[in-house]
Length: 55
Image (cartoon, rainbow, N blue to C red; front, top):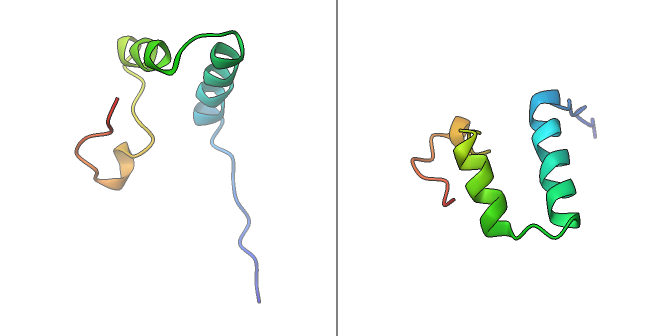
């Protein structure tokens, strides 16, 4: 069985780090989503063809 190597997308990793920091600092998931929407950060499913991400 051959394993595939995964690559980290640094742009997405930075967003994940920010989300983690906000949440650890007490920011609610609703406010995190609002911040991401204000910054026009694309949802992780944007590349999958999913029309709506649910934020």
